[in-house]
Image (cartoon, rainbow, N blue to C red; front, side):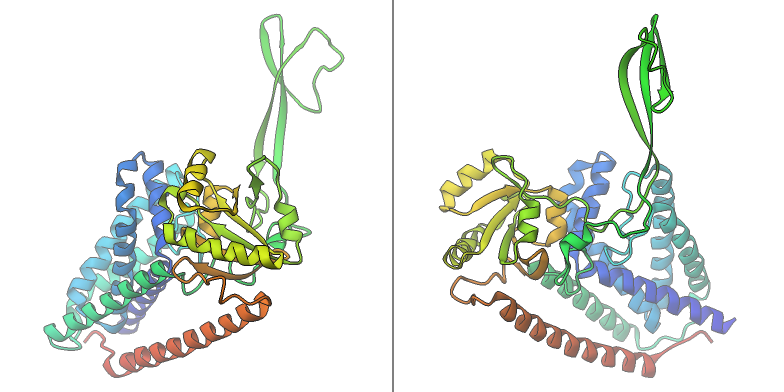
Length: 408
């Protein structure tokens, strides 16, 4: 029984850590998910609190996970884990029945689950939480009460700090289909052999005041007394959906230049600003230097937004912006880069680099060979992340090895 209890605690803690971390490094993703739910449940008045709630939820999950794994404050942690899972098990059951949002968002973009899959997953986690709760009083404290609270506080500060850093820059790990190195045209295609959507179409006809529906391949086409009214098409079976299925670029004149941009073997900068009235003004202004660099070297530069033309013209006049504005779906823009504005560099449809507006390069620092300089930057970033990750891993596992506690 002791082994079962330890396994339940470690497994539950690991899942909480994973869930809290993958969402903690992408606080904007969690914020958008909260907004989706608030919209679906007609609670738009809660949207201003979405970011705060997202950070609080992700922090709570991560702290619960670490506390479970290390056996910290097990009485409080047992209660918190049980209440947390109880609330979300009930909530996900309601979501599975009503399906207001197709993706639960419980693991961010790292792992996409349907609402029913999430509910079944939560049933298993609820069982683990009950097991941990039942034995919460039998754990030997790892430290004094003050020492344990210090550790909990430090863990909280770490995950909040990570979330704030990723909010001010970009997520440490990008799980979305527009990550650096992603081939957008390839992500838009359906692989050979994958099932396509299946539809059932009917023709609605009227005769002598009576309306009937006929299958599209079996209706009285030779009877001219029937009057055509409408055609109805229903999705019967969902087929394969490519990772990128809603990417398009439309100019102010209404021309679709998506294929033209993705096929260009030169460099293309996309300044992504999903809502201009919420965009960082300094970032929009700084992008002018990059647009000038592009004009000098023959590269493309577009600002992609979902804002109406009535917002674009006053902003251009206010900031003196001379670059071209195009239109893309707002959800797509939020998915491409977690910044408003954010900068994306493409070459023949492949994402070469991405910047938050706080890290956006200036025209002077850019080199004509953008691919080479971006690769150098990515190698440096990867090296730093690897070193930091190894350091954190060594500290964490050393702590687990020396201070692991289990039931009596």
